[in-house]
Every structure is written in C-alpha cells, then in structure tokens.
Image (cartoon, rainbow, N blue to C red; front, side, top):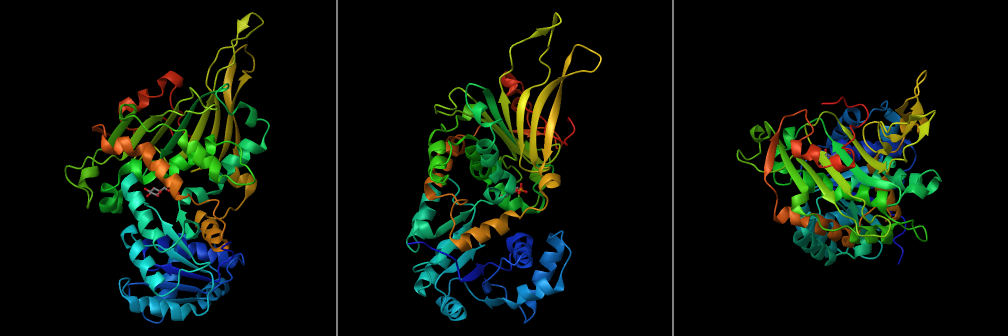
Length: 464
Ligand code: BG6
C-alpha cells in the first residue's frame, strides 16, 4: 500500500531544543512558500498557557531564521497549530491526541524526543489505534549506539509500525549539496567517466568544526565523534559519492549495495583525539576518553573502487568549519614542452563542498604567465551565488515524509550496515590522544594520508 500524502502533522517534543532550532523555523519557511497544507498538533510534557506555543514559535523563528519576519505568514502558521501537554507514558494522552486529529487517515507522527522514548510513544499511539494504514512515524537519530542496540530499537518499533511506515531522519541527506552529489556525478560527462579506480587515487572526507562541545557535554560524552557524525552523516555522504548509478529512479538498493562493499574498519587504521580542555566541560567526565576527533581509513571491496582508499576525518575545535569530499585523481604522466618538464605541483582534485561554502571545485594546472612552469589553480562553483536560496534540510525531509517519499531516509538494512562498518572501533577503540584546539587533531592523523598526497585544507580555512 502506498502511504500517500499526510493529512495531519503531529510533533512530539515540540517544546524541545530541536523543534526550537530547526523544526519551527522550517515550518515557517514552508508556510511562507505555501507548502504547508495540513493542521499541525504539537505534543510535549511542558504545560503552556494559551499563548505558549505562539510565543515559543515566534522566538524560535526570529532567533533561528535569517529571513524577514512576516506577521501574515506567522499568523497562518499559528492558525494551523494546536498543542496538547501530557505524560508520554499515560494512555490518556493518546486518547486526547486521537480526539484532536479526528478523522485523519494518514497522520505523520514526528518524534523529536530522546530515542529511549520512541517505543513508549509508538506503543501509546498504537494503543489508541493511530498507527494503522497510512500513518507514518518519523524519528530522529541516534538510532542505537551500536549494532545490537540499533537492532533492538528497530525490533521495538517494528512491533507497532512496518518498515515502510518508519522514516529515519539523517539531516545530512536533506541538505541540497549532499543530494547534489549524485546529480554532479551522473549528470556530467566531465565527472562520470573518471569516477572509478582507473582515475581515482583516493577519496578523502573532512568534516571540520571550529566550535567545541560547549553546552552539549552530557550528550556528547556518551557518544563521541564516531557515533555523532561518522556512522551516520559521513557514511551516508560516502555512499552517495561511491554508489552505482540508480536503477528505476531509486537509490535505495544502490546505497545498500555500496555499504555492503565497505569493509568494517580496522582499529589499526583509526586515530582518536580529544581536544585539550574537553574534560572541563560541564557534563563531561573528568577522566573521559571520548573522542572529539576521529580519522580512519576504509577499504572498499567493489569493482569500481578496488584499491582506492577512503579516508574520513571529523572533529570539533579544528581550525575552521567546513565539510568536503575530495576525489583525488591520479596525476597525469610527466610531459615536457619546450624541453622543460611540466612539474606536478598541487593535486588533481575534484572537491565537493557540502558544508560551509557549498559548491564544487576542480583543480587545474595552468601555465604561469611569463614562465614555462605550470601552477595549480581552482575552478570554483559557489552554489549560493549560482543557485540562490535553498530549502533547509528539515523543510525537505518533513515534506518528503508527509508526501510518503522515502528516498532520503535510510532503511534499517542501511543503518545495520553503517553500524557494522564502525563496530570494531567501538569494540576496540585505540587510545585517545590529546590535541590543541585550533589544530587538525593528533599528528598521526595528519600522516595517515601522506601516501596519497596528504589531506586538503578546505577552502576558506587558513593553514594551521
Ligand atoms: C549533528 C551532530 O548531528 O550534526 C553535531 O550531533 C554536529 O555534533 C552537527 O555539529 C553538524 O551538522 P551541520 O548541519 O551543522 O553540519
């Protein structure tokens, strides 16, 4: 059965941080673009007065959206919203939800709550007969903290909903420049023919964040960089960089095939770092060994990528903020022109920038005016100036979930594969090394890519 288009949106955890920072501003943007069609019900434990929801929404939108505040758009949004407070463990709450959404046939329940509460809420909804037919459940990461717990969570949820009804949000998949990866690869004769072991020397992904863990100490200390951004966001990005062309318009099976071709990481091919000062953050254990930086090498066992190493590094308190994928090509043979060798300065990189200043860069060597030498330069496309305004990830993902379009949501098979890939590092983590804030992590991580010419420093970040 097709899930089709939702006729209600119900948000559990509407008073929380994620709703404040992401969902409410995204709903406002959708309202402004005329894309919201259904009544929205917010549910949370917090008791609010009659204007509580409107006040919270106004603050969230003005604080977290860069667009001018339009009272008419805001009024239209508030007019479609209502609110219920209650205890998620109490069956009476779900009776009230059922009453509030009346004859809805395809409600979209969005759980912006800790994963420990997912099953409780799903059970409550099922108990009130709200999860039948075309209903859907949208959940936010983390989906488990290792392979076993991810499976246990899925088994819990599958008691109440089918896999088809489950939409797991990984906000990276909602980012326009991340979706662009497949368009760039398969839509351009310049890129598609070289995208394989014959031309590619290495793939390198960097996710650098200049900021630290700050007020998220207790959350982060139990998680670390590997689980926070590598197992989910960066592996999804890698899959889009490496998967085979879609069949019948769908990427899902190609994505799964790709993950199956990735060997589980060897802990000897990983470096973990922790920035100096991390242990002083409220909520962080004084003797914490949680990594705030991780770098690792992955091996791909596929026809296309045989012998092409993949390197991933991600960390907090690095020299700047940027996320990019570098597809490093083999160098051309040496040529001599006018009896002068054209030296191989720089690298043959295709740079796909998905965070910071999103865009694409291609390095080219050009003749230095007035000399016989070649110099590396970058051909750059900046998405913001070329393409204008883009929807935020949550606008896209909420719209897709409400339309029953599951292309940007990882299935349980995919979640399992991604945990399988990182599991050895969870089971046998190498010791964590301290690094200075503002550097690229432990020195050993810098060395890791030297055989393929070293990491690239993302555009806009000064060399540390
Ligand atoms: C989140 C992580 O999932 O992604 C954060 O929990 C991280 O630690 C964030 O900072 C990065 O997302 P973005 O969209 O800002 O690159």
